[in-house]
Image (cartoon, rainbow, N blue to C red; front, top):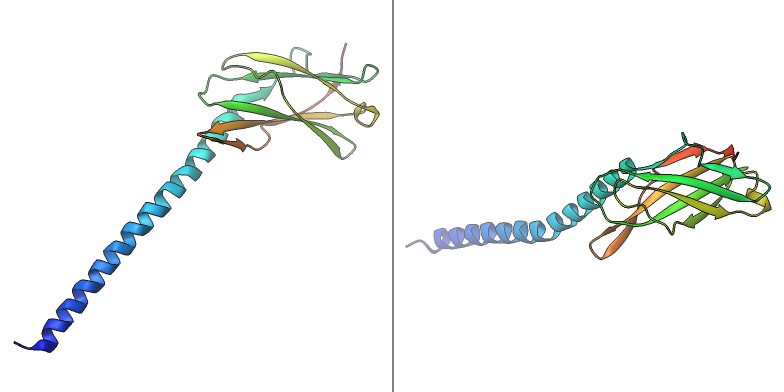
Length: 153
């Protein structure tokens, strides 16, 4: 038997086995990483499309003399775990960010009252961004909505 032909077959089989093992390792590492990224993106998408600032009923407003901002937040019925809310008050190019304390459950609304100092007593906008829990970690999502503030009546 020709030894050169046998060594070429062994080399070809080893290259095929090495390729299959490399693909297996890549699939074992890359697929969970991509799946986690997709889960995070879809959860944030659900959260940002479900959280809204309600302006129609007059509860989202600013009391400039009392230095408070009221934000009426609604949550749709989409299923996600809301860990917190990041509420931003905007005035003259600056922003003040607080985390919400009263989180609305699915299908509920809540009014959150924020005390502001002199700098933000002239606030003209408020925005809200959901912070969701995905497994053991929390993910801060993009701002769901930013609306102009009107004077409270």
